[in-house]
Image 1 (cartoon, rainbow, N blue to C red):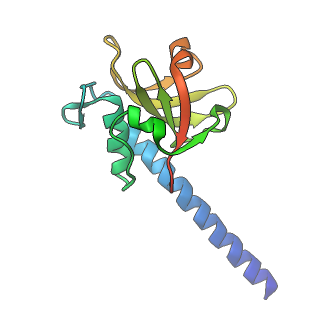
Image 2 (cartoon, rainbow, N blue to C red):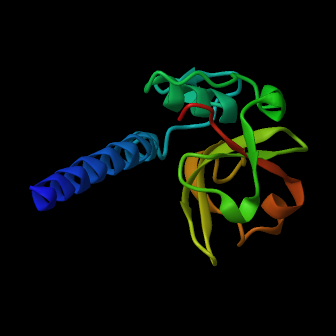
Length: 149
């Protein structure tokens, strides 16, 4: 009887862990489906384009999670997390100008995030490597974990 109860608890625990992973993975999967959508200032519409905060807002709102619509408002939102502790689904905040993106992958040597870039030559929704571009490291402000997520 004790063995069956232990197995049952392990199955339930694994199901709960899978559900948590699934929500974050679903958000990342949904976000990556928009890679290539053009950049459009002050827009959160995939048919017209996205600005950075419009993209982040659009992605999270699709899953019923409310986040700020402005990159400036992210400065006072969520839970601050150390860069080396960030995980998929966290938001990176940059300054000069204000910019946000969603972490898609993090390991010791790599940190990738998806964002709507205003870059004139390579703008739009794309995935970038944080450590490969000094511009991101110079402009980095903090990592934000979304509350209740």
